[in-house]
Amino acid sequence: MVKGSKIDTFRLGNKTSLLLKFNYSSSLLSFVFALLCIFLLDIKETIPFVFILYATLNGINVWAFNRHGNLTTMAIYTSVLSWISTIVISLCSGGIQSPFLFVLSIIVLAGYVSTKLFGTIYLYSITATIFIIFFIDYLSSDVMQNEVPEASRDLFSLFSMLFAVYLLGYIFGKNLLETHHNLYRSKNEIENRIEEKETLLKEVHHRVKNNLQTVSSLLNLQARNSKNEKIKDLLKGSQNRVLSMAMIHEMLYLNQNISKIDFRSYVEQLTEYLLNSAISKNKKITLELNIPELQLGIDTAIPLGLLINETVTNSIKYGFTEENDGIITIILEKLEKPNLYKLSISDNGIGFKEQIDLKEIKSLGLKLIHNLARQLHGSIRGLNTVSGTSYILTFKEIDKKG
Image (cartoon, rainbow, N blue to C red; front, side, top):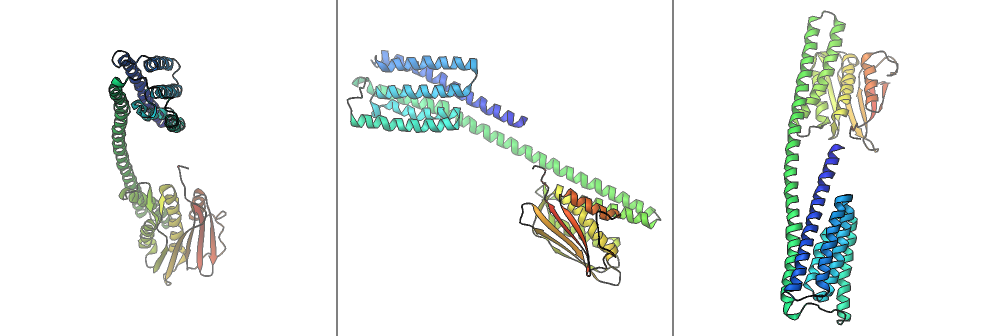
């Protein structure tokens, strides 16, 4: 919120600076042009009077802005005043052939300083004005009285062009160039900051992975020093859970994308580790994966990885005997609803003696499976079939931004 406020303040400051520069310059140039008209070009009727009136009213406009501080009001007032003044001077200096008519194309830019909507309306109004002047001049040339003496028209054209070029080049062109340089510099600064943050975040993932592996090593060491087989199993289960999380942080550290991981690759690594661990020793178990190319965020991947760890570990430990070959199948499907998936984990082992109720079961692993499903905003069913055990999980991808 603060960042957006800073951007808006910066943008407002640029618009204010541009409009004030336009007002000061156009007022000063108008006053100088009026003096040139009177003393050099011998124009003493409407044109110098309009120049002086414009400079005076625009000065009052700037003074009023310093009191009320409303940029939109000042921008609209400046645009309308510039529009009317340019029309009058153009009509009095040759109509559609007046060199001062080119100033209309310059002051269009001033209209966009206020709001995009007003700038668009201003653009169409000026375009319509040019057509109107053309048709007036075309239908009745007597209406257009050129106040500029024949001998002074070349100089009047020169001063009009210089007036337009100065406003376009020095005011709007220079501001556009400065804005471009500022944007380019800001872009480089933002890219450097993003790169620094990505490097820092990768380092964080690397450190987390190392810390989790240290915890895993401590659990493994504790299990080796214990003579109680039940405690060894509990420690081994905890070690596997820690390693399943460590693998995710390692993948995030190694990948270009530091927010998402390739889920298929992760499941392959995790299940390969579980099959090669001590709990699957002397058991012939193969794995069948049917997982599409999918990138998942860490908030979805960690609970999903823990859930796969629990279900596959249960299948390896309790679903197969040493005499039988085993197959574990993991299938992930994307459903029609957005961010909704179905994960099926099944084996062809001996299954449970009774139908599974994950809500009522007292086993820590099965309770954890049920809680992880809830964490994924989904539901899971355990099915005890004639061909083994199946878990059907329906879950949503967790998006912390939403």
